[in-house]
Image 1 (cartoon, rainbow, N blue to C red):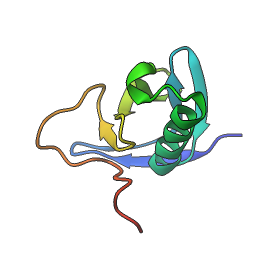
Image 2: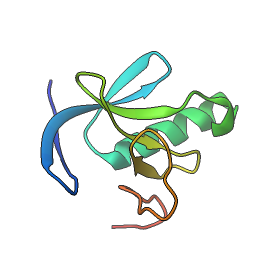
Image 3: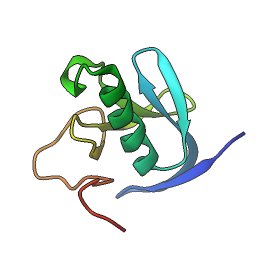
Image 4: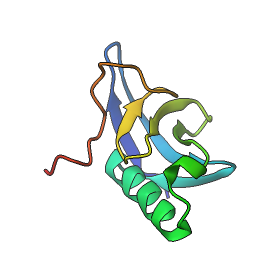
Length: 95
């Protein structure tokens, strides 16, 4: 099953199937919120804390990095945090 997700960037809009990749495992996601929740739930279940898990990346079907989930569950564009940027998804904000 393919679930497209539109991601609007400054230069273009892309519609693609996205995955949450943690280490060598990939899980198809429909939204950035789903990626955040999956990562936070996995950390809670493992009892290890986010700092002891591999970097959770959001990738497209080719493996190109679209974003990443930080330890606190926020989703950011790119493979690493850039100061003074707004998250693609902020789990502190409802709605």
